[in-house]
Length: 157
Image (tube, rainbow, N blue to C red):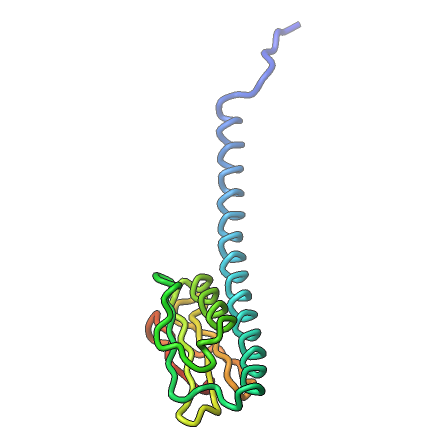
């Protein structure tokens, strides 16, 4: 009888390690995509909830506030610039901060000169050229933008 050594050869081990490495890279790529899609869903849900909050604010105050342009950046989410009227509401400010943190970009909220219209736009996490917009008419859209800063809108395009 021949004596056989039990165990794996170096080549067999290297092949197994290579296969595991390939599978791990595929899984990690899928996780990054899923993570950014999850962030996009959070941004959309956050802005949709802001629209409901804005409707309650309008019912109470009969205006959203006139000529407001409120911005919050991900770099400094605790500093909101130009936020008066509707966007001075603490619930709205909290939602704007959360949207900026999630997207990693600037979130812009505006009202028109009559105080009867508003719009909020945030850049999506998965694409620096696509934003999500909600407005006072109940419209939502995903407009293409030309920079990493959301554009001030009072009505979604």
